[in-house]
Image 1: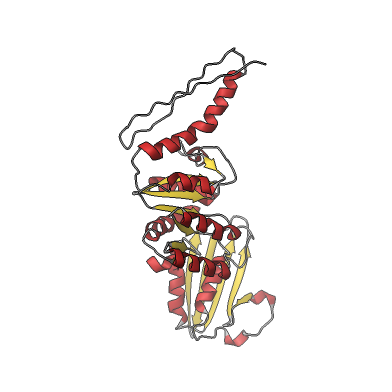
Image 2: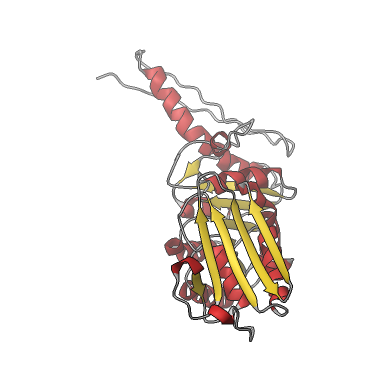
Length: 329
């Protein structure tokens, strides 16, 4: 059997902050075989990006807040990578996902240049690689409700704060996270929505609820995934327990076409699903002789990025859990 011997030579020089460092590899093979080149190319592809990430952390000065995107291969994760890369005072320090493992996150996001950051499926490994940084570290969690608590615990153990945008988190999970963060004196921001427009709609709806006795929520979605949507549920919750009973004239009706009642105060939600529709939420209020309408449309995931960047900047100063991005608007 032929023997393959490889010698890897790594040269490191201190360069300016914006310069890129690339480890160089040379391989000497005895005896020569046609398939050796393929093997070496495969090894280089798999490991050079990871080596570069480690070298960068050791020898290149940090550019700002170190941000780890957990759920980086998702649509919102890819948008977050691009937004953080372009934002002042922060940089992507790691990408975690169970898809596209080993691929450069910059290429996955169709960026002009690779970020030299491979996608890995081990959050602990990424946290360990940046935990010694003097800059503030933040983990952005786009995973799933069942994983949030463990993810925040891991981030906290390595001294990193967390921004969580995962719909349908249970009240029990939030309570447990709040107690944990309070004990650890480590900040965490759980955001039911990252859309600033959606938050402004909710605030306007609360103000209007003191002046109108009738309210209906109408939402449209292109796909029927979770209905009523988290946004509609949040609005209904905000309007409840304010001492107001809405829609008294048909409060007890069982007609399906009248929509679903959320809570005990008569707030009704109607969900419309048609392919091609934008994600839209409209709140109708009515009083004698007038109708007041508040509407918010989402046409692209990019609308969540200003809220995400705001959350990353604000969570760095927190010592406890905060629920809702509206606390910082």
